[in-house]
Length: 108
Image 1 (spheres, rainbow, N blue to C red):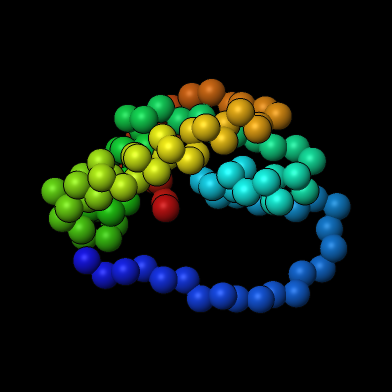
Image 2: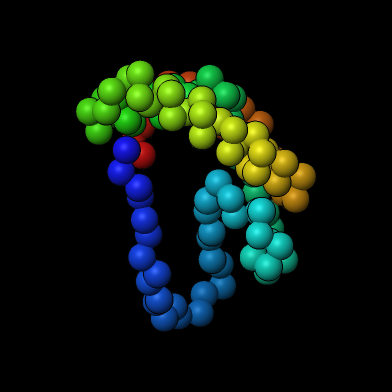
């Protein structure tokens, strides 16, 4: 399996009245979390999260289904349960059942 690496990219941003940050781990960092005025957690059913992962990786990226499921169970689900789900407690607003259905129009 190839290791995915991200390059450090620095960008200069202009000021704005509203800045939207998104990410599965955004609330796990206290330094970032404390800078956010309104924190919203989009709570999605586990089956929907899995179906989206399978659809995007198998149908859009032509990855092997068994490999996708193996990675999901060994890494993605465990990471979600250990880091993302507990950070839900820091949200000011929790939107339940977000994206409550499968859509072939889903784009990752």
